[in-house]
Length: 184
Image 1 (tube, one colour):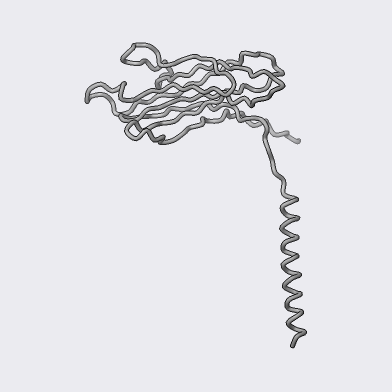
Image 2 (tube, one colour):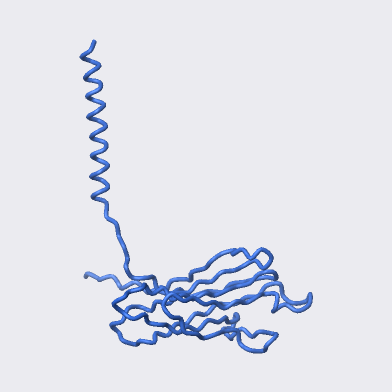
């Protein structure tokens, strides 16, 4: 009776060791990709906000701190345009909603628009349609310099609770795929 019990234990031990070895080999052979380049800043499509909401476009200079190179600032333009592509005009000031600024390494800034400021009376439309605009100008035009470190994002905020409803990183730039080689 002892013999079948020993063989059973040895068989279980061999199976467990085989499974562990297979798992280790599988993990070692699995390729892991890493893209050291940051994704390019997104482009934004139309966003609608209603009474009680605000929209904010953020910009951050995310350049890593490297003691061997001086941090390069970036100059950004934040703004909003209407459905026709015209700059959004603040009804209180009569000026275009936008700002241009320079961000040093690690700095961030934002431009905030409250929908309640654009609705007057009860006859105003219930939705403000606009498109966030982010433009970045590299202050160092050297083609060998690293990519622009300023990145944007857009968020819609509930004015009553100050909670962010959603964050929009932008739509990536689409490039037409290359023509496939035609063999004849």
